[in-house]
Amino acid sequence: MANAPRRAFDCIVLIAIGSTWGACTSGRPAPEDAAADHAVDAAADGSLMDAAIVERPPLPPPMCAPHDAGQPDVVTGPLTVVRVPDALSAPMKLAVHACAGLRNRSAGGSVYVQSNASEAAWISELSLSAATTVDAEDFVRSCAAEFTSCVRYDYASQRPLMPNILTAAAALGAMPVDRSMTVPCATTAFDAVEELRERSTPELATRYVFERFGAQTTGLAMLNPGYELQSMTPATPRITRDMQPALVDFVFSRRLFVVFLVNGCSASSTERTLLSEIVNAGRWPTPLAVYGYNNSWLTAGGYLHEAQTFCLPSRNMGAIASETTNLSFFSTRAAPIAGAGAVRPNVAETEAYDASKTYVAFVVGDGDNIDYVMSTRREWFRQRLAACSAGADACPTLTWSISPHLLQLAPDVLRWYYAQSRATGRDYFVLPPSGHLYAYPSSLAADAQDRFVTATEQDACSLGVTGVVHWDWAGTWEDAERRFLPKYARLGGAIRGVFAMNVPYVLPAFTWPASRFFTVLTGPDGGQVALFKPRSWRGVDNDSNAFFYGPRRMAEEIAAYPRGTVTWIYMTSDGGLTLQNSFLSLATMLPPHVRLVSTDTAARLAIESRR
Image 1 (tube, one colour):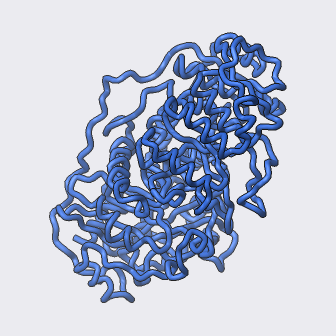
Image 2: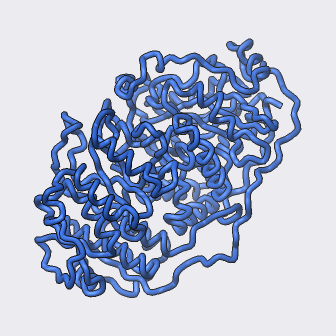
């Protein structure tokens, strides 16, 4: 699920998708700037200061199209807030969110659903003022009067088919009405009980609904109808819980095609054949952005297909982890953000490279997950603001990964984060794994890679960043370093730094010597991009495990880096790490020669150090 931690995979997962053990120990490829890199190899036991300096002119600034300030900004119509108690039945919750999506589709930014503390917090953070506050049942009755046609279904017997039922209702602009609901319905636009009686499996129902409604949809979403998440038989899990309403409002506002085929990514499965037909039918552009979350096939602690890249032989999908609520409200309330200058980040640090210093960029990870952005990361940013109120010494530079899809899914939320960053003056942003989509980009189909790079560069321009966290699978880093990542190395390119993370994270991404923390890739026109090796920090309770060092042990590691080092550390919360028990504690323990910088500055200093 979108708010579940992303965990480690083991090498057994590599075997499960057809890789070999040898992929876990692949040899290091030669980077593009081979002459400079050979100098580092020759000084494998020395510091970065021993590397040869290659004299080159400074890189020009990124070439980014400016933001069009003439476009409309915020919708100012009346706002209805719907309060949803936790005890409300699942069909009623689905109806509330479906109706919110339909209302926001017809009148942008008109309905906001409040059912938990995070949703309530954004009302306060964004100073939203409700013209009307209603309870869930009254809201559904008013919707039934406004949207008089419905899709009838039986939740008790059709749980596995809920993605198909919601697709039909979203395409028809109709209310989903379960048999248990006492909601009037003037016209039945689609009777799922009858229409799917002979198509009662997810595969048959999905094929039928795609043939009938696929042309009326605008994209793809994967939403689990309630399958158990830790099944001992992942190919045949049981339905053990209610379907959650997260993202349903957005499904209805955007008319998304919803699917959840448990074996849709499994080789030799007929469900995979069907999913491939749907994805490659030409309805939607590729690489296809898949909303929601694919939390099928929990294997060795991680969801095997969550990034979507290896799901189909066509290798043309990536994920937008977005199991959250109210995206129909946020995406219709404000115009999408696009172009340089639309949001204003902090001015980059001006520090010049000094070979007697050590430079480290700390990154708050998992910002690709929009549910995190809407919940825990807001709370962390509030903790950060409180810490920074004590003065500069309590406010060391920090970088946050943040989803580029907020540019169009939640512009108000994105602006809030940028405003808070300016309040501290020391918070910066970087594109999350792996840029435009959560994917393993060097494994995408060749015809999708250039489009992925272009989209990532456009995102970087609109966010005002020059760095991207890049995830790839063990065994694919040779292609990444030789072929894919140099696509970013061009004069005037928006990306200057690539911050690598390996999957499975416990395995090495590169076999560089221990002294090498980055290399500089050079493109055909002389453009350059710094590629940093991975360093992940996931918890703070085990000083014998480098991924779970306590803050003092991590500070000791950093202090021992060779002078002249430029590097980074990626922090994730899946092992119990929080902002307070990790970074905020560690920052006070570092020696004076260690400078904490943003990812943008780390990339610039790395390139400068090699000039």
